[in-house]
Image 1 (cartoon, rainbow, N blue to C red):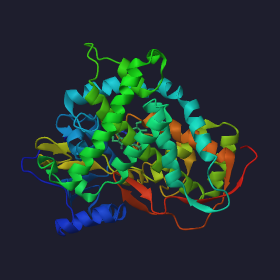
Image 2 (image 1 turned 135 degrees about the vertical axis):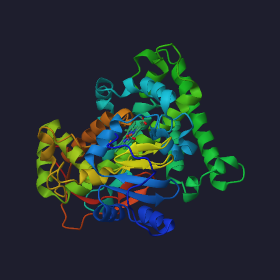
Image 3 (image 1 turned 90 degrees about the horizontal axis):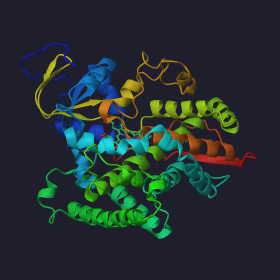
Image 4 (image 1 turned 90 degrees about the vertical axis):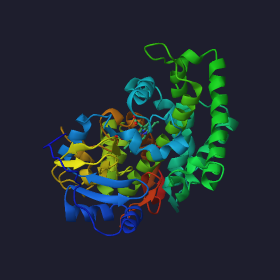
Length: 441
Ligand code: HEM
């Protein structure tokens, strides 16, 4: 991590414009502003981004490798993600550090291993097939909301194990309200000190309390299920799991983790799938190859399409770490409280790691070594728990789509990224047209 030890606190260069301007440009001009700073200041630059404060952006692959090896007690991911605690809960695996994080992660991990995810493929396929039946043929439509409907259904059934249609509808509604009715006020620091006065805090507590009541109902229903030991959903695995000392996860923590999985798992995957369609209809040759792969059950090529999408159009643009004390990094003595954010999108555009980075070329992922600098799911001990789940789900959905529908290709300019919560979504929500149903359907 340390390239040299320096004694005075220092930061990489960055714009001298007022903090409010830097903040505004960061939030309002996703990708563009960060790229401009990269071109001007190089692979390490500093911005002031409200409500986080001082943020050092990193676009050098060696810096990212250093961060993987860095002490997680000093380079804290949970502290950097703490803005999420007001919705996800204080015990969420996303916002904790140290022992608490390690313990939760160890309990949740088995539910996301390859075999556990493979067991869920058939259910993912059924859910996708049922949803695709309602897609419009012969007219333009926005694919992102359709993808969200699929991924929310997948999460509700595969993660939460909800079969009861009314409970499922209630949980989905409350998740949608928690995610999509947020406002800028949700980011204001210190609002939980005045929880009964701040309108955003009041609304959020009400929504969270409703979600918790539904989740607790589901937890109890699972406990009463005589077949709990045979169930394959993530909640069942969490209820069965215990740490080495035999302590199971308490119910309030299970609620925090379930909310985290519901929120972290559905919007991200849906956004990746929307970008995938946006890319495919603008790359007719890739679309034709992917369609043939879907017909022939060639998962390798479809996986490469998913990977290339997540490289070329990053769903989550940065990974967050925050310093718990002053520390040396890349020749700087960086002050405590500073955030270090590896920029996934800048790293994915590096020609050294990905030759001709602006080409959409899934074939690059059929070659050996292509994955070394591919980090859409983050790094190290904080790498996305749902990385395998998301990729398998994306492939299953993509295969069903391509088997069923012939999409119209287009010369329209690429859709640009706009910010939605922590993700970058296509600005026209991946507007596409299905030309006709295929015989493979
Ligand atoms: C295309 C889809 C997805 C993308 C791009 C994505 C991306 C990410 C990223 C960048 C992180 C932060 C990693 C870091 O700090 O190094 C993360 C963390 C996380 N993701 Fe995902 N994710 C996706 C889908 C999912 C799914 C499907 C689930 C669960 C069902 C999930 C659950 C989580 C959890 C629990 C964490 C926190 C891990 C920790 O801090 O230990 N994600 N994800």
